[in-house]
Amino acid sequence: MWGWLVGGYTGVLVALTGFAGFVASGVDCSKKRADAYKVLKLVLMSVTGAGGVFAVLVRLHEAGLV
Image (tube, rainbow, N blue to C red; front, side, top):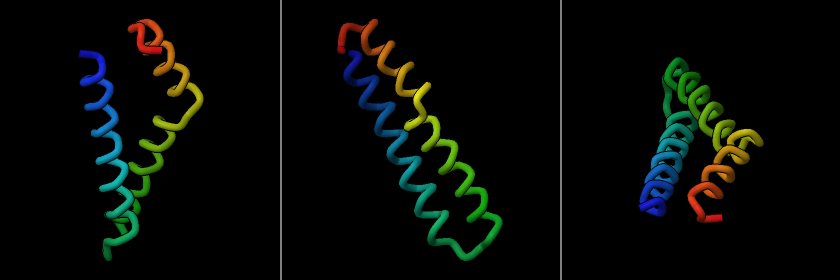
C-alpha cells in the first residue's frame, strides 16, 4: 500500500515538474512563462529541499520502508 502511495506522489511530482519545465521553456507568452517558472521553482525546492527530504525519510522510516 505504501509503495503505491509513494509511487503516485512521485509520479505526480515528476509530471508537474516536466509540464512546468516545458511551459517555462516553450511558451511564447511571457506571463505564462513567468508563472510556470514560479511553479517549477516551488516544486523543485519542495522536492529537493533538505527539509522535504528529511520529512520524507522520517515518514518512510515510520512506515518501515527505510
